[in-house]
Length: 305
Image (cartoon, rainbow, N blue to C red; front, side, top):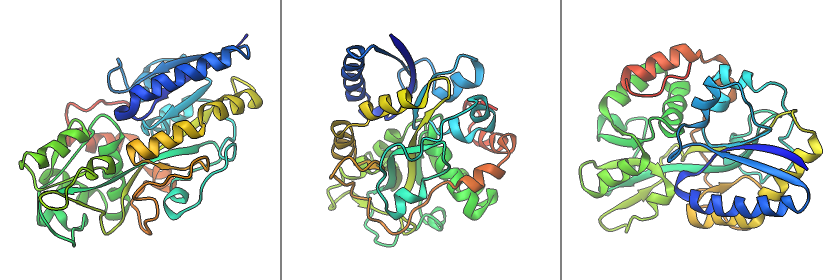
C-alpha cells in the first residue's frame, strides 16, 4: 500500500461536495493500493493551510490550495522543499485570464474565483481605480486570500499609498459573503465579491458588473513535493481533477476552470482584462513590509511572517 498525503484548502462555499467527491476518489484509489490521506484546512477547520504550514514541520506530498499565502509567503513556500515541475501535468485551457495566473513550472493552476461587483446602484461606469472617491466599497476575506489578493493586485499597480486610502475608505468584512449581504441589506452600495454572489443580482434593484479593469482573479494551485515519485503524484492528480469535479466548479460556483477537462465556462472567462497578482511582484514583496501594512488596517488578522 502506497500512502499519499494531501493537504486541501480549496473552495469553502462548495466544500460539502468537495468532501463527498474526494471520499469517492479515496475509495477508488484504495482499490489500487493507494492510501490517500486527506487533511482539510480553511473555514470550519482549526486553521488555514498557511497558518498550519508556518508553525508545523510535517509536510504533505500534495497540496491543493486557494490559500495563496502558501505560495506567496516566502518562508512557507521555501519550507516546502523540492517540488516536482507539475505545471504541464494536465492540459490547460488558454485565455487571457487563465494565462495570467500561470506563475512558474512548480505550480499548476486549477480553478479561478473571479471577483466582480454586486451593487444596489445602477451605474455602467464603475471603476475600482476611482471608486473610493465615489462610493464606499465593501469586500471581505481578511484571513483568507480574497482581501490580500485585492490589496496585492492594487499595490503592484498603484502602490501602497493607494491601498492605504482604499482600505481606510472601505468596509472590509471577515468573509466575502458578509460584504454581499451588506449590499443586500442596503448598508453599502457596492461590494467586490465572487461572481457566484453577483449572479444573484436581478438587474432591477441589484446589479452585477464586471470592473473596467476586468475581474480580480483568485486562483487555486496544485503542488507536488518530491517526497513521492512523479508518476504517483501525477496519477493521483489525474484521478482528482476529473470532468465531474470541474463541471461542478463551473456550474455551481461560476469558477473558471484552468484545466481543459470541461466544456462549461464561467460568465467571466472570456473577459479581455483582469486584475491579478504577478509572480514578479511577489518575488520582490517583503513579507514583513506587507504584514506590517496589512495588520495596521486589520489588527486581528493572522500574522504568519
